Image (tube, rainbow, N blue to C red; front, top):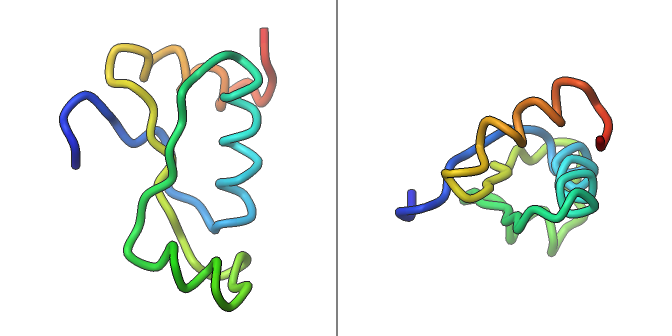
Length: 73
């Protein structure tokens, strides 16, 4: 894992995209990681391929809270 980023969730691609959108709507820089990320994109395996959702390390706790509550604010 790259320095400065921390995984906040590991989910199937389709769910990871929803988490990414939620966090980005709250102003978080977000990136998706995973060895199968390219496969998901190329073959549309969004329901099966799991990917990591990462945020800056210093904002991890805040992101966790937003994900647990399922909403912004």
